[in-house]
Image (cartoon, rainbow, N blue to C red; front, side, top):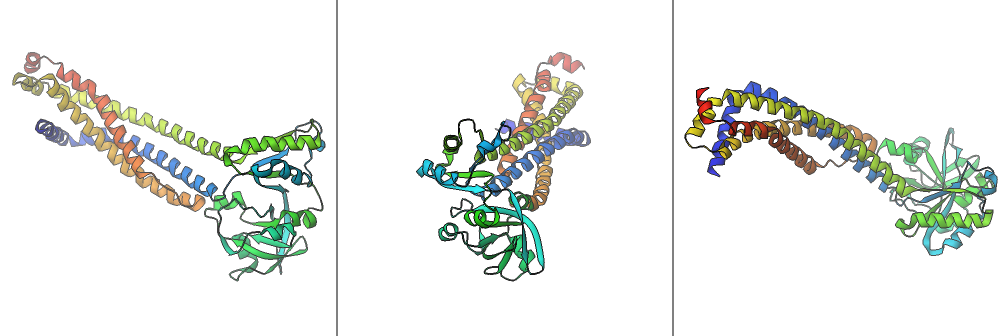
Length: 399
């Protein structure tokens, strides 16, 4: 260990004697390490933010709708009466089966009028979104097809300002509805757009009776009791619908959980790909370290000869130059890590306005920076160190 510290001090002294050259050599490592850390850190933080935001919407349902590409789409049209048949057939395997219509409605309160998205909901609530006021729909409100509505935070602000919205009246397509709940503000404007920052929720029974004019729903949402069985439940739902509408009827099933996982995987692949591109800079930096170490070996040929003549063995010479190369690599890598973390924190603060709270994996970032720095220094410093160790002491002294 004493010998190691002696080599460490000698390596530091050698790098300091040529500090301008050392700084320029480390520049490649700084750029490469900073780019990898920034890309990797931002991709991981964004993925965590997106996953957390989607998780707040709770269990993802299986979405079943008629295949629009079939020859006769009308034969596969889902009807409102199909809901009861699907619910009875699935039994305990499904927590809820609700219809959905893709429509917008005209909502007004006093002199303010907005055309907004309309979403239909039941008494089963898979999301974990908090309520700023009131409550989500109850079983009685849904089964009784009551004229009640739940609105988003943005709509509450538009229609009622800072005053409480609970108990107030809204007109939806000219029909009076009572506000029984207001969702809390959803973190991140991106997810406000995905979920609909201006959305009214109406019990699906009420919507069917008053707003859909008895028109058939566009698709069904099926919430399986076992989240891992959503694919099987989707297939069972299609089987029931085929039994009702005939074997020629074709349906598509979209697995919400699988789509979320695929989206997260794509983000991970993009982040890994961009990090790999940044890794090219590390390879270039490693070549720079190898080049400067070869120059150092050439400049110190006589020194190597003297060391060998007084008893230094091959391992001592390799250790001396390898430690020097690793110090160059570590110095550049850790400096680049600091710049990368600063860039990641800055980017995360901007993205948090869109995605909500982001988690930056600092421990993982530091581990990657140390691992890559040690790897680059060891790999690209090995050849110059072995070349120095292979020198003949007599020829080295003559030079």
